Length: 372
Ligand SMILES: Cc1cc2nc3c(=O)[nH]c(=O)nc-3n(C[C@H](O)[C@H](O)[C@H](O)COP(=O)(O)OP(=O)(O)OC[C@H]3O[C@@H](n4cnc5c(N)ncnc54)[C@H](O)[C@@H]3O)c2cc1C
Image (tube, rainbow, N blue to C red):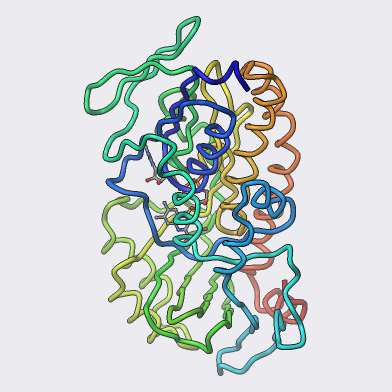
């Protein structure tokens, strides 16, 4: 792709969307720079699912075998009642039943490391910095960084997550695009097995859900609750967020007291609302958004990583098809990816209400009978 050789692209965010986009842009011949607000790639998080069309993408990226060999081995999903009896179990994998080759569940940290390994010698990383201003001109786009330096690029791709800085600067305030799904969640990962290894357990009371997922020597503890109104809280005040979970769940049955104690002591507590990002266009001028910044479907989709990798590939395919003509490529990106995003977002919205956090005892019983 001779015509792309001298082109320069800036990617904001060094997570799944940013690293995947960097992989493709580098392969197309762009000179790639990634700016990341944190002082290193951010690790942690629960497992990421890769399945369906995204399997083809990771095969094209040449990382399928490495992902497969690092995949987690979920064997069983169990739905519990207040007496800790299993009301229903779904067998995912046994010695006799193999997981189909087109589904991979992998720790987010592992996925980020594999993506990084493939890139670290080919692209420039700038950590501890972020974009503060964008100024598009006829033939390029001028970028100002927080450290005061100024740079010129051909394209800027915002891969900086649900609370994207690029989106705020270039497309407008987050409130224009965020859709609250009337629920909150917390995630804590503890370094011990709270249930049998490779098992996921769900327990519900009306309007509240618990999920435990044990793998290796770790357990993800997830609390979710419905709330029609948004709850004001400080994004940086973890103790305040832990208190919200405590107030919502204290006094409930099953293993609540023990789990709240774990959450109280956890050092990697994460709290957020279930929300989706919906935008009429993911591109404007020389700027495009990929991943959660553009079309977050919420953790209820279980598809955040997949959408990010799929989006990066669709964008790259469009740029390749149009030989770097970004205006035509961005039109294709918006058009070609949208049906898939709309389908995943609609399913996630339904998941929150009907599958994860049913509102009544009857709805919980029905979900437990039917499973997911
Ligand atoms: C540490 C971490 C833990 C996570 N844990 C979970 C989880 O447990 N469950 C779940 O469903 N999803 C989790 N996610 C979100 C999940 O990674 C995404 O839904 C999905 O993978 C899509 O990835 P993304 O690259 O679009 O966004 P993200 O993974 O959110 O990555 C955005 C990146 O941009 C960086 N960034 C943010 N603002 C700026 C800025 N202004 N300038 C430059 N860089 C910026 C961030 O530091 C981050 O590296 C987590 C994300 C992170 C960063």
